[in-house]
Image (tube, rainbow, N blue to C red; front, side, top):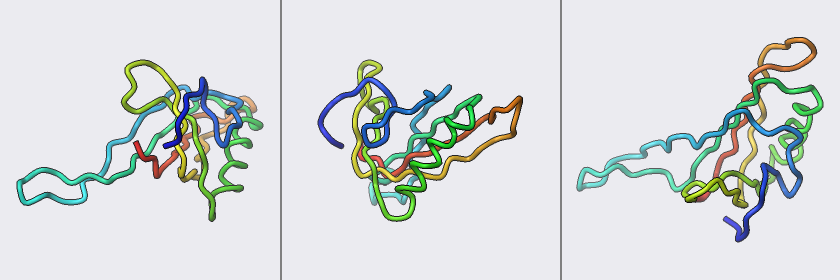
Length: 122
């Protein structure tokens, strides 16, 4: 995590052309059970964004983030703060950007694009 708040979804300081229709923190996997019976969770979280209807240029921007960072790099991604008491955005460093998954084409747009950001330390 890096210090500082922002006001929008962004990757390495570049705001997304399109905000997701839905965004959610995914459930962390249980890695095992402690001797006391308590679950042991992963130290990192994933965030999933869904875009109901994206223009091809908006999808292309997400795809370019993946292409530029997907093989070896990590990014600073601005997302809604995990445990914030309001709807505030926070800059998380060391994030891994997954390839966005496009849905069906509809009227020159792409439906239901899903995009996951992982390795988020909250």
